[in-house]
Image (tube, helix red, strand yellow):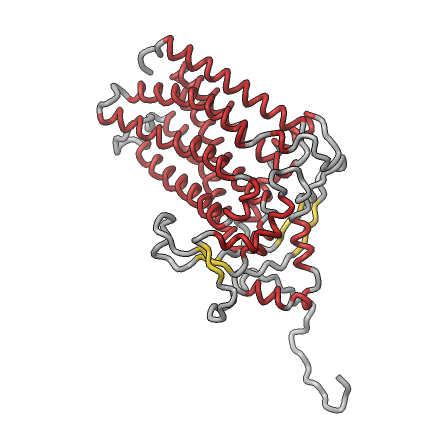
Length: 421
């Protein structure tokens, strides 16, 4: 593919890669032996796995440049996986979509120039908003493997080469598609964070967002800029640009491994008496299972959005117990009407909230038990949130209400005057 990689670059990259893998593996091991909150730590373990995957694939691409496209493909697919798991972790922290809808009901996200919503009407923070955020991340997770498969096919036919912006090559067009999908995923993640910033505050989300966006977002644009530099002549060739990109990622992953130790500390879960302890193998198997991704994908892109699967967070030896129910999830201003007439619904909303927040007695920092309760009073601290619950001019959005009328007759007979009602 080009000239051999300088030996000093390979040596530095090797030690950085080895250090990053050792730190990340030790960090994952500590989470697995203190696997007291599977709902949270499943996503955390998957996120930390990003470091060894990125570091190893980049090092192999550096020393085996003729096969770099295959190693880079694995790295890029995992990049999409990290974005999805981070959003899922944030949703798990706040109790799930139902708890977010209950906490932010009747509020909207004001138009903002830095969120690129200045020309749009206020966005209601309802169930549909949460669904769109998850869809924005999931589309990238689904599209990325497809783009990787297309890339490999085109590479085999000689129609793809990294850094070749020639219109007759596919790199330019795949980069455009990838950039659009990638930007949508990060934009959805940013909107979710702004909307739920006060709900996430007890979990210290700022360093976590910084480390995720630095690794995922900056490494992508770093690669684009490096290849543009090769195109402009600042770097001799696209092959040298690829070598430089892989070397820089190896060094950056050592920094990211250290950052993960502070952003996702295992001590938050160490010694917590949440449920029965499980072995290392069982914990690892639970973290690597993809059943949650499958059900979430089917759920988020289904025609209806009210068939929830509620998991109990105190998973015992019998495994995860599921409670499937057709839930009533109103959106927007009608949530306040539901609260005012709560006696008409009994304790249905309470049951939904309690089911989704059953892990609130955890060892997470800053007393996460009070997070959902204090969210309603603290959520208005954000300058971008507006409470519209007192407004009567907005029509109700009843599209997410599940109403079963199968047991009702098609025609209701008239009431007879001489019969008691």
